[in-house]
Length: 586
Image 1 (cartoon, rainbow, N blue to C red):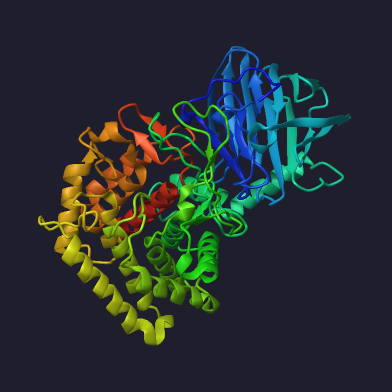
Image 2: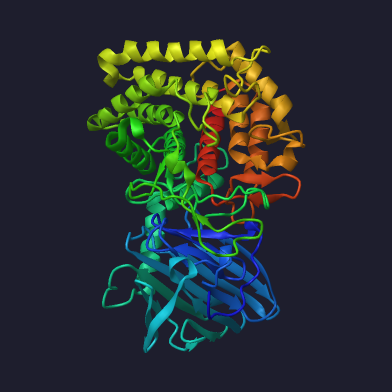
């Protein structure tokens, strides 16, 4: 690193919001500091990297002492920072122009002095390729600056008063606003030559507001529709025009300080995409279900038995892991790429078949995609006895969850009309898988165990009953749920599995996906009061922006891991829909 001022102290994760347009995301902190954004797309190099210890950032910060707050505009990824200062109230409305262009990011920032005059510090220091390439070739034309960030083109509107600092690698100035005055900044970053004219702020704002209104449905038939719309907007914001939905916007945020669990989640996981599609189907379907079906089916048709667990949103392979040479978020690392690219995950085929089945129920599974069904079913038939990495992506074993998920997918798709003459074959294979798993992976106490050679419990073992690999009232389902509640939950927080002899909350954070699985299981078993209680506890494990991370430290009440975690938002949405429907039909 070079140039720039001192690296600012990071915030706790609960204080970060996200701006997203489907093609990339910008992580925004309470100082008005954008500390993470990749361009042109999710998996490309960052231009702002302060979140993991780089210099690159873009901040708009009140010059006087302030208390921060903020919220999203309803059913959108448009954020409004609000600072109550010693001199008055300042707001900044923030968005990535939506829907995004795959080549050009358009970042909108509108600062408003609400009731008194205000002074706001502007500081723009983009550094491309993960902080390696500073801003160069700066030129000003009136109110517009242009430049280059490595191979990327940059233009910023509204910063004509700014002056270059530190060898021309950053722009700074203090914006003075009169009471009631507002000021627009528009930052463009592109891998193609920019249009001749910069965007018109009012038009960009109008288009973005209108697009979000069209993208997010009312979701009135869910518990807490406002919260449901928040999760839906997050899923939409993480979903590219290709149909691919990234697992999260960030990389290397620690699940546990100094525990080595730091991963790059800026890729589209097949399993996560299926969870999102399933959740949207539970609300009646729509564009996000189409996106999930299209992306997952394309990967199966292209790759068949060799389906990878995850891909870039472009469909390209996930790169190998490497390090950036940055300090990382405290307790975390600086890793990009993901070792998942070398794994086999059997359950992905089963999840895909379940996704295709619910889409078919809603008339959202085109006949031309049935080759993907046959490809997934054939892969299960040929590979179900192989060890796989499982849902938690650890050492290859005969994971019970993976096998039962494959059976659930076969059963789901076999009942659809398109199965034709293969219905009997697929149902027979599902029966065989369940019977074999029951013979070798059923604990002497009557519950499912993690694997043939692992008698432990696992939250993933709740999914087979929810997805009807076995009935919810089957003795094995009931015994598994009872044992799980006793051994892997505490104070209505759910954990994946037991790592060692330490207390659950010391080994890792509560896994929010699992909390929603408990709520769904209680609901399916008729325990509606407990289902609602678990739902409320789990959905409260957020910060002010209401974004879910992967884990939640129930002792310190802090978020852990990359954010926002798409599959948690998906299960939140599904749980809100299912509990609502069961409450109204009881």
